[in-house]
Length: 260
Image (cartoon, rainbow, N blue to C red; front, side):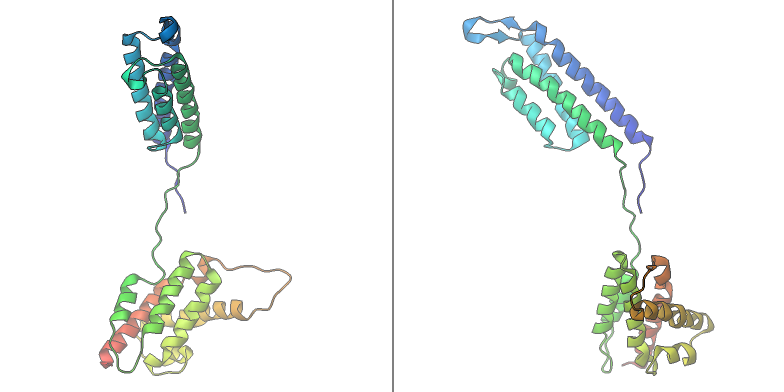
């Protein structure tokens, strides 16, 4: 899921591009101010105008860096254009370097405008299918009878599948966890756990939903042969993270209570 930033960013970008456009125009306006320095020096820009060009180039680079990131191609080429003049920042720029610098700034304006036209997406972090607190509690259990390492791994893989929208795999792993924990409650199947274990009424409803809708959905996709037309599951069909959390909390409670 993504969100698109509002007009504030676009307004800021428009202001920045207008300022850069003004700098490019001011750089171009320096070109008629070059004077013939003779056969040795060629065209030179008077000192006061050279200093102005230097200040404009610094401002333009700072704005390009802010909009496009440090060391972007336009800023780097602007530096090269300035420094490739007769004296770079340490002397008067050449006619060619001023002309090139103005064109680079204009090209940078185009890049900023293209970047601003793209929606900026902000990722929204979804909660893990299996809460990390539950996984940590399972990992910390000490038992002479039960080895919880496989259950912890099933939970880890379930989180990976759910995070990557692997909905069928999510259902399969959920079904595996239900089968895996049944012996902790004293039964060979989760169907009997859901129907016979003396859970509190509110807990029992969730366990029966896992056994019914959760298992049935997983079994359907696990055993369904290929058909001429298919309808793939969505995240809604495997949305049993709350019921699973209750189940795992009961696993932890029973294991701690038994002292095993």
